[in-house]
Length: 289
Ligand SMILES: [Zn+2]
Image (cartoon, rainbow, N blue to C red; front, side):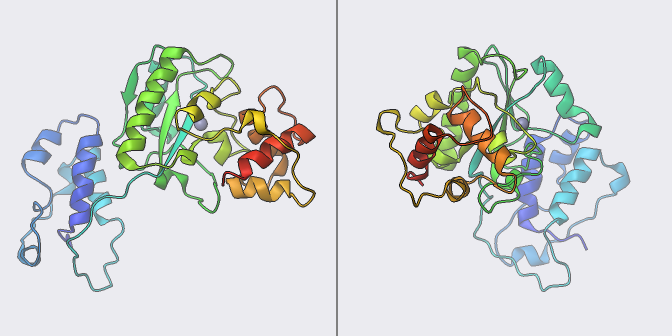
């Protein structure tokens, strides 16, 4: 049964906004796939014509798929009228490890790659939005931060055009800050929830690289940094592994977690052991959580 579930309608609208231009899109929008939203009981009586899926573009089929996803048809359905869409609560920063924005856009548009991000930012500062903020991009992969194991569902992915072996130009970082500022104010994302891909997948990923200016970003409220003039040795009771876990790191591969931590905060040394100095940095950051 093709029910006029309004959450689905929200997704349909979002997907129309987010979708690439397709031949059938104009027609689909002029003649909605489902009834337009009406509050209350009127929905129960609305007659909806099931579309002939053979006539639909892949993008329109995706809209229908999203409308049906999340429904449990064997349970009684009654529609509440107070809701909106879920908001992202994290931003994950990446470097593309590719050579150009054009190459990255192409990668995100080839069916077999199964990867994407919401934004791509060029070396010259150009900002390209590739997905609506509300849809789930495929940028995190297998990842974990704290107890969250589905980072794609709660985050925005931002890819910086960078091959991983070069500094990030000022124009690119300034554009990134503009995007982060917009996202932070629009979705009320906490300072500490601006993190890197390597933070959430330390055993698989190393982006963004040691060239990424985490300190500069933290000073503007995106991410966290330590108090450089106030480092002290932690007490004997301090447990470094627990501290990494409390910050969010998955310590199941402890060496990888330490390297991810050091790539971000120590920078000049990314060996998989915590020195006395590294522990003082970790202790300082841990106390902020
Ligand atoms: Zn990445």
